[in-house]
Length: 163
Image 1: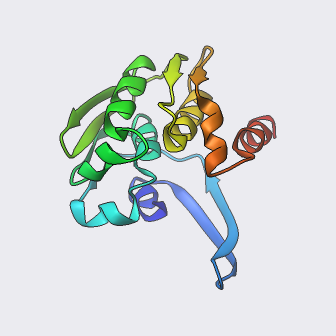
Image 2: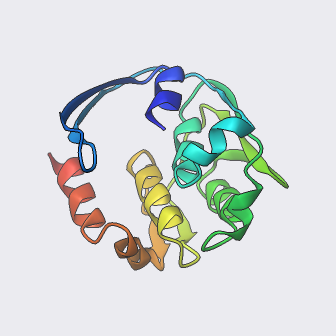
């Protein structure tokens, strides 16, 4: 995921503290001008869980970001492609779907909206991030499902926003 963000122009530095048993460290990201990218089918296995968030990032990038070869997104906790398209459009995103992926045209100014997390933690977290860059209120129905993978997600997000 970080490699794709860097390819898009994101300025990200990783300070690795530990390698084993799991990598542990600090990520420092700076504001960057982003450009669209193509995500190839061979990249999908390493990105599958981050693709909803990548769609959100793509809304802020110049050009059209395409993701193909990701049909597996249709059979996760939700149909994540459909969820990205429906919720993205609600926020003003220019997004189209394909049987095996999606494309997002940017940059697009997002707006607050009513979001349906579809009981999918990845969708809830991705659109909570989108809400940070969208004026107006965003309400995420079922957003509490984010606790499945990150129990303190919303507290952490509030701390980042306020800090």
